[in-house]
Image 1 (cartoon, chains in turn cyan, red):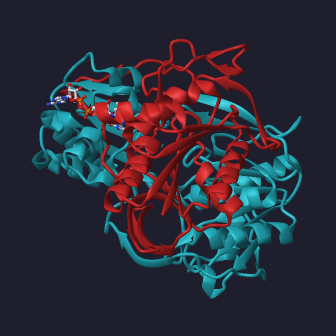
Image 2: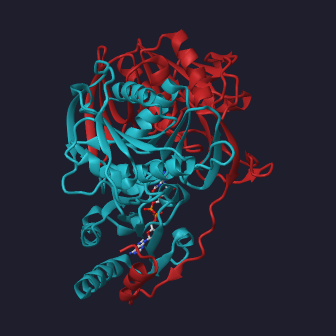
Image 3: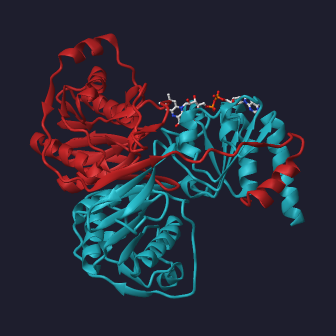
Length: 320
Length: 247
Ligand SMILES: Cc1cc2nc3c(=O)[nH]c(=O)nc-3n(C[C@H](O)[C@H](O)[C@H](O)COP(=O)(O)OP(=O)(O)OC[C@H]3O[C@@H](n4cnc5c(N)ncnc54)[C@H](O)[C@@H]3O)c2cc1C
């Protein structure tokens, strides 16, 4: 059986969960077994409806001790649930929480693990998973040698697939260890789309000259329903908050559309965004290296192009 | 307090990524090696800052790698740290590497173990999480802030769309990222001192690897950029809608 871990926060299932459910269901089909899901904590979502992503059963632990993320507690509970349900493959999202617990769960289960998977495992001979390495500059095929396997899927690399069907929801009883941390505050950036979950990202660099010029970037992002990002020197100079920094040493993202404005496209920047499906580069320098990594390019002054692009999108939306 | 800082050797961020031996090995020809930036800039520097606040703090560095890792561990010692341990084995299996570090950690009875958020070569983000399981310690990942008051650590970590603050009692494993500390450059005094700091070589414990790398592959090259006239944003919108289908 393939068991998919469903992450939630603030009683809401995370967006990344729908993709790992689809991935787990596709893998189960390939292996000729069932796909089931595991949720820790109470959520407002209808768990039976997760059947539409291809899982037949949703196991839920709703004890007080698992309402909030605690890596050590979650690791214990997930490993125990995996053993109890007889799971042979456990799937996580390679998200912030997934990274914290999937490797520890693998250790507890004596399982081999591949994190950052970018496609379905090849299971005709053995169990080989392709993952991104060198910050998206290459792929490695890794064979898992153990009977139990753990795979953590790169976000936005497989897609979400739905079908007809409902899942049965079952409470699962496992021992809950005492908390290992005490969460004292949670701050969410209000009204903004989390960068790692955004389908569209509008990003800007040093070419914008100063923080006072970000208005047009925010406007374009709003028009597109996009999140905003920036290059490292921009956040290092405090023009933008640090959580917007993408690249080798910042966040690695893979949106459907990445629009880079006034960013030269240094290799360290590309390392954080090269998994984006479509890249648009706006730069006044025709020699900017970013054009080599782009799908669409506009050569010219960002201060004229960005407002014009915004107008064109608004016009197209009004017409549609 | 005793801190163990995990140090990994990675290719320079601008290194050419190529493979040899039928695409089964990373081509190390001409590659410059650096300390994994997350290990250097964030976990090591934060550990050094903790020692600056409390001089009784002892910092040990550990790296798992063959003799060619020594320049990297010396460079790390030039930044700070009291002594280093090198476990003499090259491995690409996270579990094998984590098991070596766990053996060192058990023997040294450390209060705090710092790792980088991930390495920039294999991007697996596994070692910290695995160590927490092997040592049965609390784990906070992607930490961007760490303060210590007695035995209690106050930690901030990144979460989707925000930040979470938590407290825990040591011992613990923490994986570090941007925000923890500011990058430092080793000075001459540090470089001189590093030459005489103890570097202990330890033979590996026997562990069965759980994974094997079969081969590598480079992504298909982009087919080439399609340029759109700066005065024709309607055309760009059309392409994004009809061709790329992303808006
Ligand atoms: C170890 C290491 C790690 C690093 N990690 C990261 C990382 O994670 N993320 C990251 O981003 N960088 C990282 N860097 C830095 C990286 O090498 C580059 O220095 C950085 O990405 C450059 O940022 P930029 O493109 O905004 O600025 P610049 O390189 O200064 O580029 C500005 C661009 O704006 C264009 N421009 C100027 N004016 C206009 C205008 N009016 N209209 C349109 N275009 C205009 C210019 O032509 C130029 O291409 C790292 C470096 C190292 C050594």
